[in-house]
Length: 361
Image 1 (cartoon, rainbow, N blue to C red):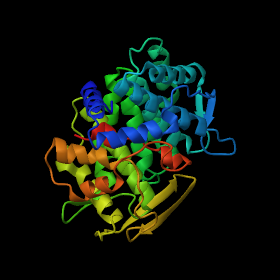
Image 2 (cartoon, one colour):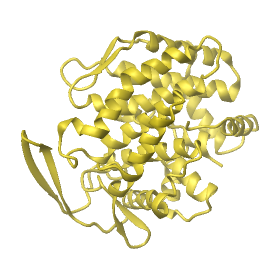
Image 3 (cartoon, rainbow, N blue to C red):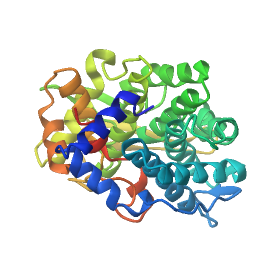
Image 4 (cartoon, rainbow, N blue to C red):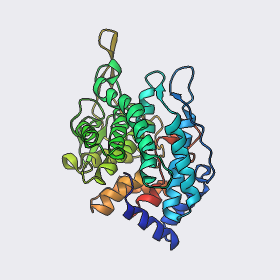
């Protein structure tokens, strides 16, 4: 999904040679407690995100532990890490039957859906890993919520939910489609990203094209924490699709690149143009309102997430395109860590991370 075997071979060779910047990325991975072998899963039958009975921290911590141990195994060959990743994944596929909570359950289906599927895909074929049971869990627990959100948006107006809500669930549908060898699900995700009605389709996520190769990001008037979240989620969608032979990075004249350049430039402390818009919110027949978004928001400006290496290495290294702002923020955030390196709250686990190790080319 996010990584091919060629990617793992490159990571392993560069780390074995002590080459930079891969070595610095490897050092961040091995220093992270989630990557240590012997991590014990704490699976729950029902995971709640939102409301009074939240317990979703166990899911994202275990998911990142599975991913980080899988990554360490693929690079080092140490099967104690593979065994740990396998055991975490198997424990959850044996136990989890439901995602619940308030509307935030759709964030859980999206973010943890695409992340868990990525960890599972790395472990495909490993002795003792129950792929079929994992596929069933992903298709029966995560996929229905993710797909339903993209169709019905929790009963709200199509504009009610910001771009990241769509994008995380697009990522989940795509990742589950890949894991389950289900081309209909892959097509569903790609079709939404390229032409969906909500704010997460790329035409709406990069809502206004501005001068200088910039694309105004849909959440830029909200805050920069969510703007950078959206870049990370859209990047994951594009990278997973690329590895299936589908070029979403280049869709609509590299529209996503223009969004990356806009968000990176503003968060590097530079001015960007902004086109105001009206945001309709609420649900038909329940309540409705609107907000006038008139200026780019300085809230959380300079926010650092482990998202830039992926898009920088695609556009600049793979494709040979100019992305000066993206390149500058990638350099600022290097070497990227992962879950557990960016604070204890859920926002620090929104991306799998370790892009310096995984995506440097």
